Length: 286
Image 1 (tube, rainbow, N blue to C red):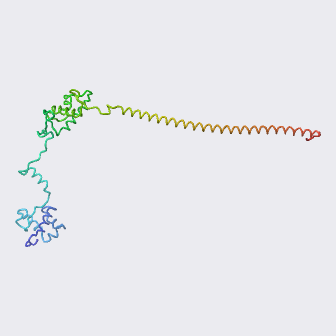
Image 2: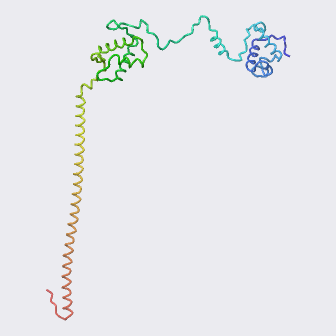
Image 3: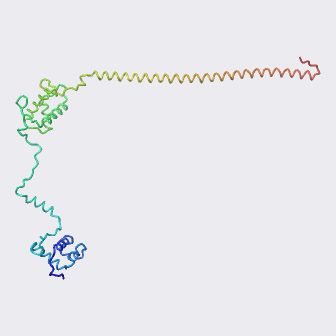
């Protein structure tokens, strides 16, 4: 047994609590044998640890050292605190509830239109204008669309306030006054792009492309003519060379023919002279 006269020190208590947190209550031998706590608890026995743990559990802070005893940190207390906060919230805490997506329009966000009749949600003006242009683009009526057609297109597709028809009529008149829309009697449509009213640049561009194509064709034709001329010149030179070779061959043949003819004549003369000599006739040489 350990020395009961020794008072527990804060270091020993911390080692005991840390050992219980690591090995669990009742594992006194394991705690004493653990090198991590052996030096601090060298003067303590199993019974010392058991008694000290009982005292700390029954009346923490009344026995032991003057330091306040702490319960063993076996598990993290984060989730327990969170659950306690949820089940028993502080009395002054007001839970935060996110606003609904479709909030009501405040009176401060509404201003009279140009006629002073219809109120317009100034913060949603860009959104309403986008709905209008979307509707006109989808309807794509060459003569334009009236307020009812535009309203019936937008209403099932977007969240709009109850007085949206009045807002829509006001926005259509405002967009027409700003030349962003064309108004034909009671019909509205998106203005034609500037390029559609001025086809002249397209005609000029077409003429330019035609001229470029003609120039390219002319350049190709000239190149083909030059190549054909070069080929023809090569053929002519080749033919002339063949003609020259043929002429030389003909001249050589003619020379050989004359030589053969003269050789034949000399052979006849030699035969005659041989016959005369063989017959004993005298032969005179000029």
